[in-house]
Image (spheres, rainbow, N blue to C red):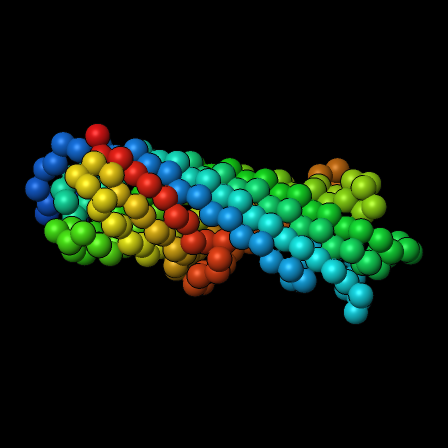
Length: 223
Protein backbone atom coordinates (compact mmCIF):
# COMPACT_ATOMS: atom_id res chain seq x y z
CA UNK A 1 0.00 0.00 0.00
CA UNK A 2 2.91 2.37 0.61
CA UNK A 3 4.03 1.95 -3.00
CA UNK A 4 0.49 2.56 -4.25
CA UNK A 5 0.09 5.69 -2.11
CA UNK A 6 3.41 7.02 -3.42
CA UNK A 7 2.34 6.46 -7.03
CA UNK A 8 -1.00 8.20 -6.43
CA UNK A 9 0.81 11.15 -4.83
CA UNK A 10 3.15 11.49 -7.82
CA UNK A 11 0.15 11.34 -10.14
CA UNK A 12 -1.58 14.17 -8.25
CA UNK A 13 1.56 16.34 -8.22
CA UNK A 14 2.01 15.81 -11.97
CA UNK A 15 -1.59 16.81 -12.67
CA UNK A 16 -1.34 19.96 -10.58
CA UNK A 17 1.96 21.02 -12.11
CA UNK A 18 0.65 20.51 -15.64
CA UNK A 19 -2.54 22.45 -14.98
CA UNK A 20 -0.63 25.43 -13.65
CA UNK A 21 1.34 25.71 -16.89
CA UNK A 22 -1.69 25.97 -19.17
CA UNK A 23 -3.98 28.78 -20.28
CA UNK A 24 -7.61 28.77 -19.17
CA UNK A 25 -10.42 27.42 -21.39
CA UNK A 26 -14.19 27.39 -20.79
CA UNK A 27 -15.25 24.34 -22.82
CA UNK A 28 -16.82 21.17 -21.40
CA UNK A 29 -16.86 17.84 -23.23
CA UNK A 30 -19.42 15.05 -23.10
CA UNK A 31 -18.44 11.76 -24.66
CA UNK A 32 -18.47 8.01 -24.65
CA UNK A 33 -16.64 5.11 -26.25
CA UNK A 34 -17.49 1.48 -26.96
CA UNK A 35 -15.56 -1.73 -27.44
CA UNK A 36 -16.64 -5.12 -28.79
CA UNK A 37 -14.57 -8.22 -29.43
CA UNK A 38 -15.14 -11.91 -30.26
CA UNK A 39 -12.60 -14.71 -30.03
CA UNK A 40 -12.91 -18.41 -30.83
CA UNK A 41 -11.11 -21.31 -29.13
CA UNK A 42 -9.36 -19.07 -26.61
CA UNK A 43 -8.18 -20.55 -23.33
CA UNK A 44 -10.78 -19.57 -20.67
CA UNK A 45 -8.62 -19.45 -17.53
CA UNK A 46 -10.01 -20.65 -14.23
CA UNK A 47 -10.71 -23.68 -12.09
CA UNK A 48 -13.43 -26.30 -12.19
CA UNK A 49 -12.68 -27.96 -15.54
CA UNK A 50 -9.80 -28.95 -17.78
CA UNK A 51 -9.26 -28.54 -21.51
CA UNK A 52 -9.34 -31.49 -23.89
CA UNK A 53 -8.53 -31.76 -27.62
CA UNK A 54 -12.27 -31.59 -28.38
CA UNK A 55 -12.84 -28.25 -26.67
CA UNK A 56 -14.69 -25.56 -28.59
CA UNK A 57 -14.87 -22.15 -26.95
CA UNK A 58 -16.22 -18.72 -27.84
CA UNK A 59 -15.66 -15.48 -25.91
CA UNK A 60 -17.36 -12.12 -26.38
CA UNK A 61 -16.70 -8.81 -24.64
CA UNK A 62 -18.62 -5.52 -24.71
CA UNK A 63 -17.51 -2.32 -23.00
CA UNK A 64 -19.05 1.12 -22.71
CA UNK A 65 -17.31 4.13 -21.12
CA UNK A 66 -19.23 7.45 -20.86
CA UNK A 67 -17.43 10.50 -19.43
CA UNK A 68 -17.62 14.23 -18.85
CA UNK A 69 -14.63 16.54 -18.90
CA UNK A 70 -13.41 20.12 -18.75
CA UNK A 71 -10.94 21.67 -21.17
CA UNK A 72 -8.37 23.47 -19.06
CA UNK A 73 -6.58 24.42 -22.28
CA UNK A 74 -6.28 23.04 -25.83
CA UNK A 75 -3.54 20.74 -24.50
CA UNK A 76 -5.20 19.55 -21.27
CA UNK A 77 -8.57 18.00 -20.40
CA UNK A 78 -9.56 16.62 -16.97
CA UNK A 79 -12.66 14.54 -16.36
CA UNK A 80 -14.76 11.89 -14.63
CA UNK A 81 -15.81 8.61 -16.18
CA UNK A 82 -17.73 5.37 -15.69
CA UNK A 83 -16.58 2.10 -17.25
CA UNK A 84 -19.00 -0.78 -17.89
CA UNK A 85 -17.81 -4.19 -19.10
CA UNK A 86 -19.58 -7.47 -19.86
CA UNK A 87 -17.90 -10.72 -20.91
CA UNK A 88 -19.29 -14.12 -21.90
CA UNK A 89 -17.31 -17.33 -22.47
CA UNK A 90 -18.75 -20.70 -23.48
CA UNK A 91 -16.65 -23.87 -23.64
CA UNK A 92 -18.07 -27.12 -24.99
CA UNK A 93 -16.84 -30.65 -24.24
CA UNK A 94 -14.91 -29.63 -21.13
CA UNK A 95 -13.89 -32.30 -18.62
CA UNK A 96 -14.87 -31.32 -15.06
CA UNK A 97 -12.36 -31.54 -12.23
CA UNK A 98 -12.36 -32.72 -9.45
CA UNK A 99 -15.95 -33.87 -10.01
CA UNK A 100 -16.41 -36.53 -12.75
CA UNK A 101 -18.13 -35.86 -16.04
CA UNK A 102 -17.94 -33.42 -18.92
CA UNK A 103 -20.14 -30.93 -20.70
CA UNK A 104 -20.60 -27.24 -21.32
CA UNK A 105 -19.01 -24.54 -19.17
CA UNK A 106 -20.15 -20.91 -19.23
CA UNK A 107 -18.58 -17.92 -17.53
CA UNK A 108 -20.50 -14.64 -17.28
CA UNK A 109 -18.67 -11.59 -15.97
CA UNK A 110 -19.87 -8.05 -15.30
CA UNK A 111 -17.71 -5.10 -14.27
CA UNK A 112 -18.24 -1.46 -13.36
CA UNK A 113 -15.59 1.16 -12.67
CA UNK A 114 -15.49 4.79 -11.55
CA UNK A 115 -12.55 7.11 -11.93
CA UNK A 116 -10.82 10.33 -12.93
CA UNK A 117 -8.54 11.03 -15.88
CA UNK A 118 -6.54 13.74 -17.60
CA UNK A 119 -5.80 14.00 -21.30
CA UNK A 120 -2.57 15.59 -22.52
CA UNK A 121 -2.78 16.46 -26.24
CA UNK A 122 0.48 16.64 -28.19
CA UNK A 123 -0.68 18.62 -31.24
CA UNK A 124 -4.08 20.26 -30.54
CA UNK A 125 -3.96 22.56 -33.58
CA UNK A 126 -4.04 19.62 -36.03
CA UNK A 127 -7.22 17.92 -37.25
CA UNK A 128 -5.73 14.57 -36.15
CA UNK A 129 -4.19 14.76 -32.67
CA UNK A 130 -2.32 12.34 -30.44
CA UNK A 131 -2.79 12.22 -26.68
CA UNK A 132 -1.64 10.55 -23.47
CA UNK A 133 -4.36 9.79 -20.90
CA UNK A 134 -3.34 8.99 -17.29
CA UNK A 135 -6.18 7.73 -15.06
CA UNK A 136 -7.16 6.30 -11.68
CA UNK A 137 -10.16 3.94 -11.50
CA UNK A 138 -11.82 1.69 -8.93
CA UNK A 139 -13.54 -1.46 -10.25
CA UNK A 140 -16.02 -4.00 -8.92
CA UNK A 141 -16.30 -7.24 -10.88
CA UNK A 142 -18.58 -10.29 -10.58
CA UNK A 143 -18.02 -13.60 -12.38
CA UNK A 144 -20.34 -16.61 -12.37
CA UNK A 145 -19.40 -20.06 -13.65
CA UNK A 146 -21.97 -22.60 -14.83
CA UNK A 147 -21.42 -26.30 -15.58
CA UNK A 148 -24.26 -27.72 -17.69
CA UNK A 149 -26.41 -24.71 -16.67
CA UNK A 150 -25.78 -25.28 -12.93
CA UNK A 151 -24.15 -22.42 -10.99
CA UNK A 152 -20.94 -23.82 -9.50
CA UNK A 153 -18.97 -20.74 -8.49
CA UNK A 154 -19.36 -16.99 -8.05
CA UNK A 155 -16.29 -14.78 -7.63
CA UNK A 156 -16.22 -11.11 -6.63
CA UNK A 157 -13.21 -8.90 -7.33
CA UNK A 158 -12.45 -5.33 -6.21
CA UNK A 159 -9.39 -3.47 -7.43
CA UNK A 160 -7.81 -0.06 -7.95
CA UNK A 161 -6.14 0.61 -11.29
CA UNK A 162 -3.61 3.35 -11.97
CA UNK A 163 -2.37 3.69 -15.53
CA UNK A 164 -1.92 5.63 -18.71
CA UNK A 165 -3.28 4.94 -22.18
CA UNK A 166 -2.66 6.29 -25.68
CA UNK A 167 -5.17 7.75 -28.06
CA UNK A 168 -6.10 9.66 -31.21
CA UNK A 169 -8.61 12.49 -31.72
CA UNK A 170 -10.05 13.49 -35.11
CA UNK A 171 -11.81 16.87 -35.17
CA UNK A 172 -14.86 16.50 -37.42
CA UNK A 173 -15.81 20.14 -36.74
CA UNK A 174 -15.52 22.65 -33.86
CA UNK A 175 -18.10 20.78 -31.74
CA UNK A 176 -17.73 17.12 -32.68
CA UNK A 177 -14.74 14.78 -32.76
CA UNK A 178 -14.05 11.06 -33.04
CA UNK A 179 -11.69 9.31 -30.64
CA UNK A 180 -9.70 6.11 -30.38
CA UNK A 181 -8.26 5.01 -27.03
CA UNK A 182 -6.04 2.00 -26.35
CA UNK A 183 -4.59 0.39 -23.26
CA UNK A 184 -1.09 1.04 -22.02
CA UNK A 185 0.90 0.78 -18.83
CA UNK A 186 -1.13 -0.03 -15.73
CA UNK A 187 -0.70 -0.95 -12.07
CA UNK A 188 -3.50 -2.93 -10.40
CA UNK A 189 -3.98 -3.65 -6.69
CA UNK A 190 -7.01 -5.46 -5.29
CA UNK A 191 -8.56 -8.57 -3.81
CA UNK A 192 -10.86 -11.42 -4.85
CA UNK A 193 -13.06 -13.93 -3.07
CA UNK A 194 -15.26 -16.86 -4.02
CA UNK A 195 -18.75 -16.41 -2.58
CA UNK A 196 -19.81 -18.84 0.19
CA UNK A 197 -16.27 -20.26 0.51
CA UNK A 198 -13.05 -19.45 2.34
CA UNK A 199 -11.21 -18.91 -0.95
CA UNK A 200 -9.81 -15.44 -1.57
CA UNK A 201 -6.62 -13.44 -1.74
CA UNK A 202 -5.02 -10.07 -2.44
CA UNK A 203 -3.27 -9.46 -5.75
CA UNK A 204 -1.31 -6.85 -7.67
CA UNK A 205 0.11 -6.54 -11.17
CA UNK A 206 2.07 -4.15 -13.34
CA UNK A 207 2.39 -4.37 -17.10
CA UNK A 208 1.52 -3.33 -20.64
CA UNK A 209 -1.96 -4.16 -21.92
CA UNK A 210 -2.67 -3.62 -25.64
CA UNK A 211 -5.18 -6.37 -26.48
CA UNK A 212 -8.46 -5.92 -28.42
CA UNK A 213 -10.59 -5.62 -25.26
CA UNK A 214 -8.71 -2.39 -24.46
CA UNK A 215 -9.30 -0.53 -27.74
CA UNK A 216 -12.27 1.85 -27.52
CA UNK A 217 -13.84 3.88 -30.34
CA UNK A 218 -15.95 6.91 -29.43
CA UNK A 219 -17.42 10.32 -30.09
CA UNK A 220 -17.42 13.46 -27.95
CA UNK A 221 -19.15 16.84 -28.08
CA UNK A 222 -17.61 20.14 -27.00
CA UNK A 223 -20.22 22.18 -25.08
